[in-house]
Length: 249
Figure 1 (spheres, helix red, strand yellow):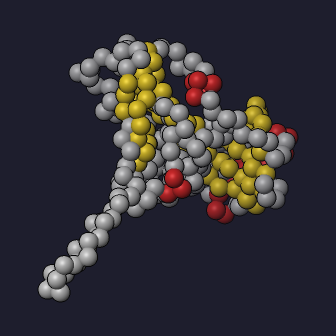
Figure 2: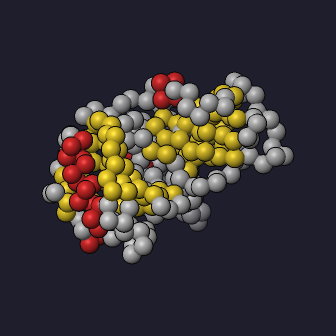
């Protein structure tokens, strides 16, 4: 893809010295961070000084729990990466099925924002909810290159048994890109997306492409969700097998 949200505080209870003095109630604490989510390596922030944009990258110890549509740890709350007061153009982090513990998000800075320098430490936060976030100190890299092999720099591990697919399916209403196949072949992934192409319709079902009415596709159970402005993830599962596609208007 930082401030660290306090997950818990140590409660210290003192015994009452006299019967008439009631014991102090333990202080209220924030809920523990689900699953002990943390940064494995310091975040990396690519800074384009001319465009005043940031490309924020993080590597986590595990994937977030929801990665169909907007990535999230908690349902109905899209996670986001924050740094240097950057603003979100199109909200939503980028999820990489081939390297599922790494996430990124693009931010833009106001013209009045101070210039960043190469190697400068910078606070990066992964906001998970209104009350929970993971925070750490990352490093700025001045670069206009949109893809300078960040995955290698962060050491993002590749998902086992997952392959990248390179094909498209022309559906009844939308063209679907066939992206990955896990524990199955790209041939099967294409066949599943061909079935999806028969019913996926953003005009009739903008948010979920009517997936709830057509769950079984060649034995795969499918779901779809918005991952941006007029763009969708399509994920179908059958046992351990998972195939992923995407589409946009």
